[in-house]
Length: 488
Ligand code: GLN
Image (cartoon, rainbow, N blue to C red; front, side, top):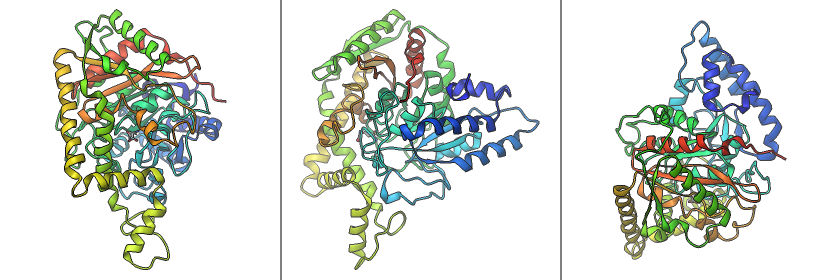
């Protein structure tokens, strides 16, 4: 079987057994990327030369020594808002177009220490703001299932790269759905860990109280495998949790859902849900029942307030986080400026795209004197209520099952003229970030037009194992992962 078709874990086993070398892996992926990248456009930067050097260095250090770390020799793609020392990290923004970080994000340091192979940095919506990659300053990525459709966003490049076999697995970041929504649109698996489970050090901040790095993979086993390699406490991130990391692969041992109570929130099956999506998700719920789960209707009554709450909190935090891009310390600096204020203004005018500017203005407004209590203060109060809804639900059930998105992937331009329409595409993912709980998105069917549909499982804080166990049981009892896109 061709190397690029293997899952991450399959490749790991072959590598550990000495059946394939790092150099062969790099060569195979070089060929695959050469075949499809001009159509998919998943990458902003391909680390072509450095990955060859990494592979030979690995081969040299491995001579006569067969013990391997989990990610050793594994070819990964990294979202371009995660800092990689010596490799450009642009955030898909002109502002950071020439930014080469002098340090690694903690997740990258961990992968590097294990001997992973960095294939390249993947496309995203500028500063992770968006749902389609159409906000990238370098042009959008395309959905491997239908090149006229968006791959989702903001981690659209990572999801497209995984779906198109342009990497064995990828990392994305999720602030309001940016791992799960593109995973759903591209027919792959995406896991947003509990807030604090994975270090954010070196993840370029969008909305710090919501951002979380996580895996985008070909199947559930790979999600467990990659999460184990990046999770854990980090003194460099004050919001990272000092909670032991379990062996996530062990969670996959049980193949039934006996004793698991699974909640179905009525609010997630309301008007606006595409009939193909509803049908696929309802069928998946039946399957979870057949696997031994007990299905229970539950309520998450503040679901309708989630999008509004998110767009106050996320923009407020973004306006503050993005204040550092002023042309002085790093990144773009505008030329021919009159004075310091002119330098700030021209740099920000030239460096940021329209969506980022819109959010900075919104965020600055909701934080300004006179409006702070009315908007930001209120949004924080509603956020607490949303979290309490989840707390109450998790007294009754162990897991919550919902659709990931109201519709399958949409075509380019369908929502980019209307920001509100775009914002509404995150309606099912956003409350999970506001509550800080973990959730996984995995394939559960196809629309009549042949586009993938995603199933979302939401769990209690730090109970990624339960998510993985249920997702794995469902995945193994269905065939969805077998179908692959034909890229043309
Ligand atoms: N689409 C949402 C937004 O634009 C979520 C983005 C994300 O999770 N990074 O804010």
